[in-house]
Length: 392
Image (cartoon, rainbow, N blue to C red; front, side, top):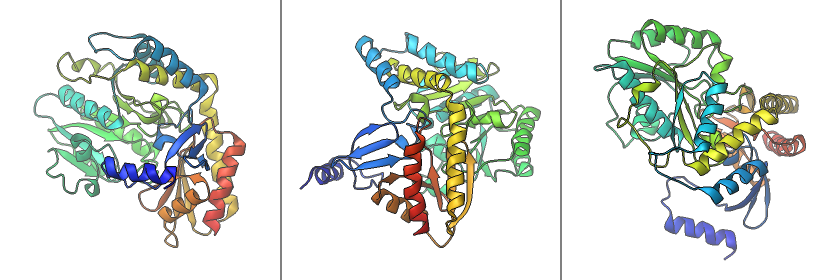
């Protein structure tokens, strides 16, 4: 039995098999490249399932920050604070809409914090949350209640008061609002749902509906931020400001960080005793996140995200693969719509055989989210593989 087979067998023996893992064991990563246990190299255009979205694998500046913090302090209770927590929070809020942050570990946890905050801010009797078909807000019971029914099977009943409508339909949103509604939650770009981008008119109309009805507008930016779309935060494309924003994945520079950012109008409703997270704001993870945010500014990765998106779209369009019906997204969050002649999952698996990592999303969409530090030659190498598979 070779090394990879042994690890795969051990995974099956000792880990709960809830992920449907592919038979590949990864041992090393650098930038936009990873290597399996047998030494095979892959171009990774979906690093860390989004968690490596800014820096790629093991960026030297992030690794340096982690090593320095590991030598100083790994963790402490949240009766205290630490410098990396403050540094990361400052970088987030100064590039967003101000406010304050709550730290946790994941996007699902950040959304749970946002839901609790929304109920407290709305007041007694207002508990309903409006979300959108094709959304994804996590697998905890609160997040799952907001997410489409396909993910809920076997876990019913969901939390009460969750209403789903079609993204883009302001009339449906208005009709769903009643005296018990507390908030509306939306992804500025639906990533898991197929890389679906709402219109500016819809997002502005949504903001107005929330204002007119004293509702909080929550933007779930777990996939879109920081910098992935070419803006620090994707809501900035629409000329609106949310009341609450949730972050995770790339915000941690590769380590687990979740963040709930609340504006000045609602941040202070989470008083001591209302919510908590033992390891939230862990100094090691916060230091990695702060290093990633600094890297974005120092290396102008906002513009790099736009350049990557343009390069990917141009290459796939010029290749003229018959199975591609649309390319959509913003910046380096890219959805390639595959028509009924092919299955996106088959394309993904064939790419992996040839040394390229991509992913899929709902409705037969191939999803790319390259690290913003990906060099053009490495990006082109990955695109050559992708185009070869799309045209084969």
